[in-house]
Length: 189
Image (cartoon, rainbow, N blue to C red; front, side, top):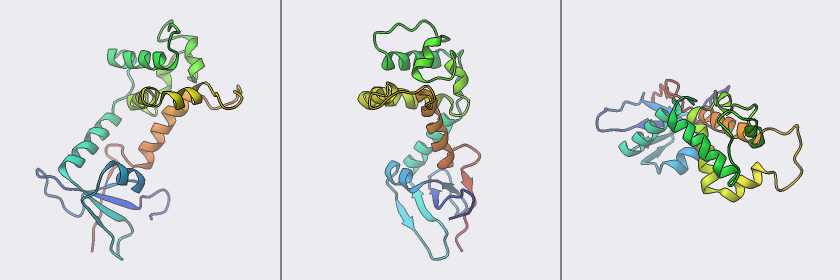
């Protein structure tokens, strides 16, 4: 493994429209790659410092779509983004009317201020999508964490919603998914 946060995994892109060379590589985490992509080929040579995975064209397309989504910042003027934020509110507090996209109510969810759009800087729109996915697909766990049902809630705690944004941001960083940063040179000798 490389020092200072380097990756121990290399993913080669194999596609029909691109003739791959050993230098076309995406770095990432075995936990994510192993579960998110069933690998075509896993290789490890004594000279390699990383494990190599070859992606099929479909897997490559999925990875590219994910990387494209990561580049989308949250835009408070975008209707789709506004609707997603409202949907998160309704999934979090069903039956409680939202007074506005800028409201002190958002602090109850764990946003730093009354305008949650200012907290999306690091995670972008995908972090809102992830929070909404969590709320819709794992409502019991989401509610337990949001409302701190197991334990006492303290004023000094890390805000739930901001933590969700930061988890998305950290995963993007850990998996080297940001566009322009994910291609690394990998030469097998």
